[in-house]
Image (cartoon, rainbow, N blue to C red; front, side):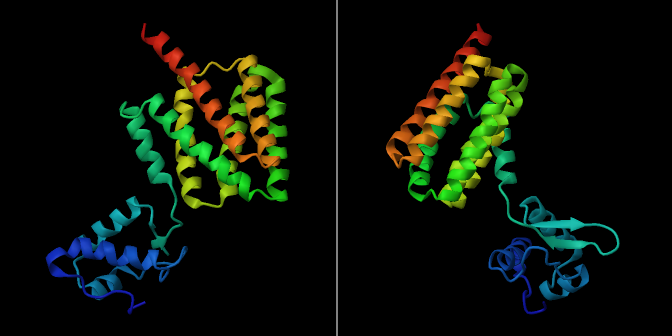
Length: 244
């Protein structure tokens, strides 16, 4: 791997070390599971100090690009790039009250509506079969009533995220995964999900899938937008009641 790196630019050595290793990973010269050269070898390649190199590796680990393993056979190993850091950042924004229910609903109305429209045009027979299985799972929990609310919401989440998966667009997949990972905080605090609401939610899911299967993309998108708007309204009402 000696050809991967060059001596770091001395006027911005720390940043250059981070960028060189990051680019090697992004360009595919270093692949998932590859182990970076030993610290001593990296120091020689980059012509940098141990402290600078270790700090750069910590930054790359924080970015989710590498994992630093300790002990015998340890070292820096290239990781699969994930949306975990984005999810954590949104979580912090929510907890610090910089992102509200209205903000999330506004985003979801537009994006999830567009996702369903696109998914309808790209849906295959295999997607229909999986959606049918996911709907049956949600229906099973709805039939059990309030004792299965947590399982029902998990099934609901799977269906929404599967709409994104059908598009085949990793940006939609990643962003909506991030949004839905953070929605549970609001559900736990503000969502009243008794049997009527569970059945209403299930009906919306069944209606949107039916519209997708019939090829009516615009109807499917509008059902999703209305669904998000309505259930967000329920939560905002509960939020206002808590404040009064």
